[in-house]
Length: 253
Length: 244
Image (cartoon, rainbow over all chains, first blue to last red; front, side):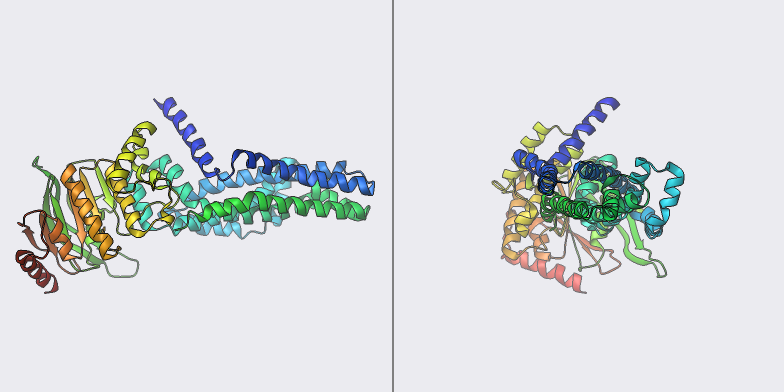
């Protein structure tokens, strides 16, 4: 029985999220993913071809940075949603929100030495450091959505049987979907700062490190790297976040 | 509890306590019974604690004194401001309670289709609440409640946020549904006419803290003529009691 219900929940989770992403028709979805990867790389290769500079390191660096940010974002998203839905409402929330606020106010760059002591100069350190900055806007955005939700909705969810895990999946998460999107938009932009920061300060690879080195040696590479980064950030914003933001407006009454 | 009763309210009192403030009494010594299949209305001045009474009956609020006995586990509620979920389509809103109860998708679909027809939402199943008028949204709220096949339907000022014409139409539709299923309905309203038009019994409650002033039977033939002499004399009687 337990195993069966677990399986059911799993399929329910998948069904739930696929529902939210229906804004992308199958082919546009593929196209979007394609554009995000292809566009910046094509630009690099073309520019590299014209200016006769080696762009191999730039592509690797950009990929590595994007990977770090993506990993950190996924961690932040999961942790943010869990913290908000489990600790963020009612009496528990009255206690935990000030605690979260305290941690949020710690300057994240001040934590770099701690992360380095714990994990060394590794990828893991970078990802966790980035997550420690991305988490807060996502968490606080969801918290404010949950805490200002209409009592009516809470009551209707309760009366119609949304309790426990079902309440989280079918009520709290859809309720905070617009907040998850706006929180993610802010979180990702802070995340880029953290990626570049940690790569300049503490690592010898990634786009931050690449730009830092290029600034000291090859100004052409610096310009190429900066423009490519902007192009990537811009395409992600246009192709991922804007459609989701538009979808989330439907949720508002 | 007697088998013909579905709800028993025993000497119920409730106060809200706020920090640094005196307790704030909203209900005082309320007792009444509800028979299976009856349409009961609770009328009284606005802001008098009637909604709190409903929230105690549904178990959303624990009363500070007294008790509630409910003889069913099939309860549903219709809200004053609809409370339909903006992120779900009409179809999914209506099916929400069924989905939570673990009803299979196929079964759900059949029930939803039936309810959509019953409340007059045919053709709107793919729409989101944002795209609907107030009256249509309340139809969704009603269908969501009916979908779980409730034995006890709780309604909190269901027609108060609607314009007169829409409300009139929806009242007629609700009565037709009630004749068909004969579930028990407990409705709170501040509109005396509405209470007389629809209910078998009316409980008149006082201004805050709400206590029972009188419980009276409405012995008028259905369908009721709201322009008849007996209708008006009842209306005057109740109105004067509320105002006194």
